[in-house]
Length: 138
Image (cartoon, rainbow, N blue to C red; front, side, top):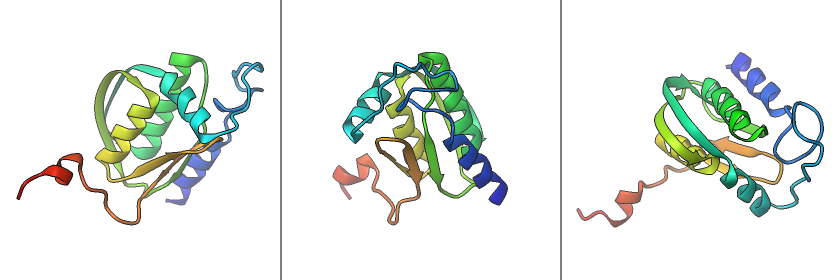
């Protein structure tokens, strides 16, 4: 698990959507000042196609980083505080980055939060009910 966490920490230090500078991010990108501004930027990034089957969470995040860069020319910062044994399977086309994060985290019992400088993926303290469970009849 330590090796996976080290890889994820290294991933976090790439230049992101939120600030200009090095690592192929245009220097004209303005730093994000609020969570809402970060969310709006991520919603504008459309992933044309994403197909994964039983990918580890770290491999999924790496693939999502690549797909995000291919779609927008930008990277994003991601901090993962979740078990390393999580497996992700999904087939999506023309979906926003925020929707990909929502579908992926919900499917494996995780949650995500967009902050001004990073996306945080974590295991919630209590399980979240499924959308159908809210209105389902016994």
